[in-house]
Length: 270
Ligand code: NAD
Image (tube, rainbow, N blue to C red; front, side, top):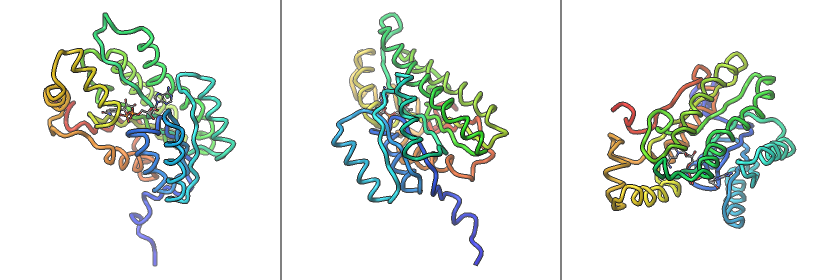
């Protein structure tokens, strides 16, 4: 019997994918989702080494895929290059990169710590330039590649007190479009996912920082600042972003490139 195309359109078997910042939150969900969809994955990020190893080995056992870990600090170019050397040694080819690692800092511009600005631009923006440039030549040669940048609604619109984050995320949108054009004739597809607020450790911390910066209660920050801007009045979920990432990693998305995939509950339609 001939297979219906839908029976295998999300089969990602045999793809080797790096997911940055995947020891927590959205990235951890994406790494698990991609492995369950058939990919060998490299996870990366900080955290308790024992907990990371439990996550890594459980995922490997559950999926029978290869799951490896890099503790590279992505604010260091040498560490990023070391992570790629490890990837090559353990996996060989690289088919996909999910640029997800990111941090936040909330403060008025006149009090914004200079070292936080530098750290956010380095991690949330420059690290994606480095991973993209290091993966690109091989993807070009193979004429197939997927780069998925986890941007934000803040890649498309601003909020006060988040100067570094909003600047970095707007930069990611430029990088996405430029590299989509450069990869277009080589089978490389580059897209950005722009989520609204997702309840992860990054946001839990932000709720408290925003409460302080705006002199508001935690409940008021959730209802009057965060979800106020999301017309659905619901947090975006990690599961939704995982499904979108798996879809973008597949062959089904050959005509989607340079796109901003808005998953912000209508925020930017306002
Ligand atoms: P998180 O804090 O749960 O996870 C961040 C990950 O990045 C962790 O694995 C952490 O160890 C890693 N990391 C931090 N510094 C690093 C460094 N120097 N080198 C390598 N890894 C490092 O955050 P999250 O909410 O899951 O966010 C993931 C991405 O999604 C970020 O880019 C964020 O901007 C974006 N995003 C989040 C939301 C949200 O509401 N949570 C909304 C839109 C976009």
